[in-house]
Length: 431
Image (cartoon, rainbow, N blue to C red; front, side, top):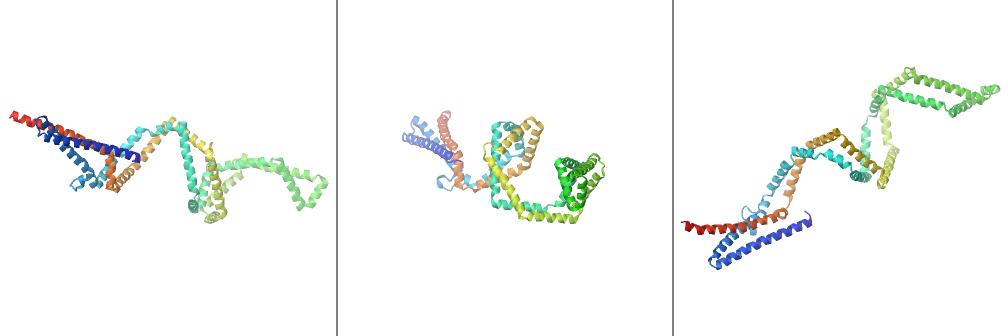
């Protein structure tokens, strides 16, 4: 309860107490005045009304006060009911809320009636809402970056990642990955692409010139006499270009043969080499040991940690700069994703049903623990309050209304007094 609200309720409670007390004082003065008149004539009626009203007012005052404290500070049995039964009240209140408001079927029924997926679809399609969600996610990401930036957290994460990587069987995992990549002869597509790129590269005039230069250079070093003899007959550069062209044509023809013939021996040899390597990755202990040693060396090398830290720092710096910009690229993408998800929900009934079903399953799975946990929290919180704090909170909440019991008791008691006085006057006449 806020301070302003508590102060307002305290003033209203004090006001009602003054009114109830003023009414008690009024009927008491009427009673005294009527008794001074010896109950003659109309004063007999006034005395009957005032006497019964006083009794009713005092009885109800006692009842209201007895709920919260001992009347007049006297330890009268069965008074100060709320403080004396605080533990039982706490348990009963918690059980009531748990069983009547948080029953699993009740929560699920309310959730279904609420139609969370449908409402989410409508909400996310509103540009302002998508922008709001994107902003919240971007803020959360910025906070996450600050958390990760803590040196202690970074050390912990780095150690955890290295620990997980050390446990990875890189050899067996590589074998499984390559198995998946080579299924349905996918590796042959890679070979075709490589052959095409190589053939295109060899067709480049600059490459052919480079080959010619290499031939002249090698021949000049290894076979100088042969090169001089060739020079007597023809131009050595022209001869080299022709040789290079012949080599390129031969290689290109060979590459095209491989590319055009699915049953080419080189393709089969490639299949066998890949299959053999995958088999070794799975079964060759010596290869696995070498790969594991290389992995350990890589993880332990300072350059690896420095490289990974550099990558993370670059990514973090980019994210920070982007999130600080009014036209943040990341926020824009998040906003677009939120709106797109909202539209997908709106257009796809099956998707909405799936989301609702998963929410229902989550609620059903968590409801019992949540109910019991909340009930325990309520009970323990109430039990932990000081008696005076509990009394003050309850009195501020319902005390004003309880004062009407005193007012009603005064007036109803007076009315009963009048009725009894009328009966006392009527009985002798009947007799």
